[in-house]
Image (cartoon, rainbow, N blue to C red; front, side, top):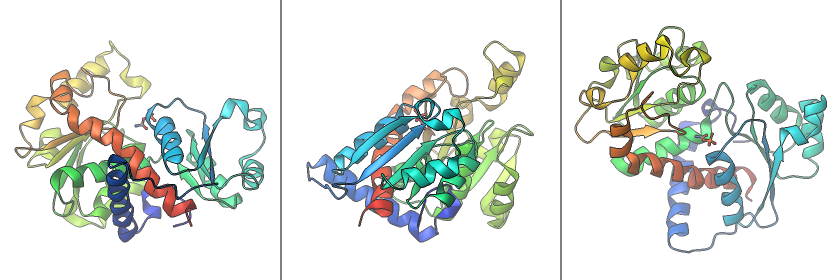
Length: 302
Ligand code: CP
């Protein structure tokens, strides 16, 4: 593993290795066992989008590992004034040990990785959110003790996180059922990949079908401008796809609920479902820290 740009960069074994290491790092951190494996290493963190979880968890993770995080707002870099990703990659490779980047354009992440000499980690693009999905898988395994044989259901429109969840979930042994409105679901390449898993993947428009007998139900914030607050489109979407008590009733008893956050309670998820599953949702947010530390160790440790 040279970079983490999307879930398909990882083999099935590499995913499980990262989750195992993340469990160990979480145990060590909870038990005040120091693990400064990245002493002397520096991670550049480029953001051209806002972030709470990704920024803070990478920054704190590097500090806990004994390394040094460097926050780089894209608007303060020469990228803003036209310096290419290719040249930025070649310059930053001379100073840093790794780069984490959040940017809308997935091709920017690919170009950084292609032209740089150091590992690149995708902290969310319009195509993929692998760090989030590793945290999701860690949380599911923590709560359910296994991944193999479980069913995860997704309800609502979705893009980058859903793309990564489908690929990562199937590789880790989950069955994945997705209910999305036509034209607002996973990317075509991801659906083609998922088809090779046969009955373990399904894509439909009815959330009740996806949620039936699910062990895990998840959704994401509905970001499209089409779904602005107060619009008829949002009201129709909520009526059909909202993760609420009715939808949960189709899942298995004891099903867990995940949401990558930030949440718009009352839109993609009801307040009642969010609050009754807040323990799982905030554990999922915490697990970003542990799983990213594992990724950092795999990529820039040693
Ligand atoms: N889930 C997630 O990536 O959160 P942030 O946008 O706050 O980083």
